[in-house]
Structures are given as structure tokens and as C-alpha cells.
Length: 487
Image 1 (tube, rainbow, N blue to C red):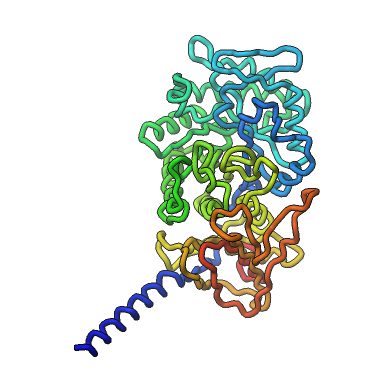
Image 2 (cartoon, rainbow, N blue to C red):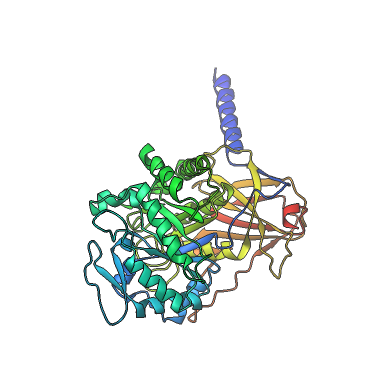
């Protein structure tokens, strides 16, 4: 009897061990064929919330060379000035002031606009400006006079701008107690396109929209986007929509680390792609505003290491599923900022810098032996050329959200130089709630003049698998590969 119990116990332990082994030892197979997608070189972009305009950028110092350097490290990218406040702003020169006009109660002075544009030029990023859609005539049509003034001013000063009109029209009723139907908004976009076409500098500039908060939230929202595209798909370069995983006030550690949370993004992208496909428009799809948690992010979480997993996964999954651009909310201010109020970079900023340096626009097809609930998630692109490797290099990047176990993953499907595999391993400094982040066990920090530290990879020889620590991120660069898409 005792021997039988011992055998049963050993059997159960072996079974559990085998199950654990299969759960956390995935293989990722790279398919050597045409690129899965080619995304914009501005794929990773950022936003500055319009709420900063109200304070005349008093906290976000547009003249600070250090701050300019922090933004420049993320170029090339779009720099979107938008958000809820976009529909409360009117443009004015430095002499007159609109004061309060309808729902608009913030004046954006021409002098501040010039400072903003000069900042984007110094940082080598392209400005996206979101025009006020709630300046309305009595019959409900858009009052475009203020936009016309701003566009003329922009043309006179040869400003290269991408334009939007309105922010989250599906929330107008709850925020502003008003409504603009999709058919009318489509007409407004056509008016804006015609206004832009009057100027040589803007007759081929991008106009993007409609910046809905959540297309997948209801059938009514899907119909709103569909109706908009029926009338305006020919005048917008890209369909823009917003996505967050959960509200900031009710965020938990489990939500930040659960694979089910990560899979939510795929469902939402699927809904938007389906609506766009049915419209027959062929428009690009942009995530026009996104972060971990809405309503300013989750305090003590969205700006800490724990948020890096959702951010890196969004970049990998978004490119894999065909998004052309992802605009991060926000570069500054609130709990989801990439840079804190003292201009200290948060962990997501460092993840973004590494992504910009290592990951190219060419997305590769990577399959996994695991299901969508696996704690290990990986993606593949051709690597950007550097002094260390040529254009045939491939970068695998991803995350391990398991909090208790190392994960050993393997790869297959391609040949590479086994004597030189470069690894950039990112881990927390002390806890998941640290603002510090470590690269290959060294805490990262920016120099006083805004320069990056030496982001030196670890060189691995004869690497056939990789052991990821619990709750870590990795960029692995394989050189001299035989992947046709990267040669």
C-alpha cells in the first residue's frame, strides 16, 4: 500500500513536471516567405495631449534641449497633438483672442503654435494636428472658418502637417451633450480635404480620421465607422481609432500580466479590419491613440516596469495584424506618460528606444507551438542595419509574463551565424513597480545633456535556445540569415 502511494505520488509529480515543461518551453518557427506586412517607418509614434496647450506648454518646455533630445531619440515618428481637449480649442493670432466660442474655451495662440512646430522640427518628428470638430453652425454643419485660418497660417509658414478633425466623436454625447452623426462628419472631412487642396503644401498631405474611442464596443459604433467610410474613405489616408485595455482606476497587477488582456487587442483589431474591409476602401489602419489604461492611465502602474509587457506586445501584435501606425498616449503628463514631470524617462520610453534602434518596418511570419494563453509571446521583423550587422539580420522580440518560472524558448525555420547572436534583455530593478529598467543587468539612465548610454548587447555563441527570466523582455538579433525578405 505504501509503495503504491509512493509510485502514485512520483507519477503525479512527473506528470506535473511534464505539463510545466510543455507550457513554458515554446518553439517559434520563422516562415521564410514574402514579408507578412510592411509598416510605416513612423510605426511607433507618440502623442502630446492637448491639455498641455491650456497651460501654454508651461510644464512641457518646448525650448528645453534636453527634452528635445528625449523626443528625438524616438524619431522618425508622428507627433500627434490631440485628445479630448482638441474639441475645446480655437486658433488665434497674438493680437486677438476668441475667448469662449461655443464649446471651445481654450485659445491656441499663433506664437505657441510656432514654438510647437519648431520643437517638432528640432526633434525631427512630423506633427499631426487634430482640428476642432465641435465648432458647429446652427444647422449642424461644421464651421470651418477657424480651421481655414489655422491652415492658411500653417501654409504661410511652410509647416509640414498631417491633419485630423475631431477626437472620439462616439463619445461626444457623454462628454459634450451633443452629437455629430457619421454622415455629417464625412461631409466635414470632404470640406477639410478641399480646404487643404487649395494650398500646394497640403494638396498631397495626409488627412486621417475618425479617431473613434472604441469601434468594437458596440454594433452602433461599427455602423458609425461604416457610415463614415461610405462618405469619406476617398479623402482619408488612414482610418484612426483608439484602444485601451481597461480603465486606470480599476487596474490590477493581474490585468497587466494576464495573457487574456493581451488577446483583447487582437479582437478589437479584427473588428476594425472587418469594417474597413467591408467598405472596400483599402484605407491604412492606424491606432491613433493608445496606452495600457484609459482616463490618464493606472497610477503607479502605467508608468512603471509592469506596463512594459503590454506596450511591447502591442507593438509586436499590431504590426503582425497589419496596423500601419501606433500612436502612444502620451509623451508627457498623466500616469501613462513615456517621460515623467521631471523629464525622467519611464520604462516604456526605454522599450521604445530599443524598438526604434533594432526593429525595421518589415514584419515576418512567426508561428508558435503554444496557444494564445502562453506567458511567452514573441514577434519577428527584419532588423535595422547597424555597425554590428547588415540588412540580412532578423530580430525576435517579446516577453515572458510568468512570475515564477524561467522560460526556455527555441527557434527554427532559418539559418544564421551561430557565432554571433546578440541579446538585449530587459528586467526590472527591484520590483515590477520600479521606474528603473535594466538592460543586461545594468540600470539605464540618460546623460545630463540628453545622450543615450551605450546600449551594448550581450554576444552569445552557439546559442540554440534562450532562457528568459521571469517577467522579462528580450530582443534577440540573428545575423547573416537566409531570410529572403531581409536580404
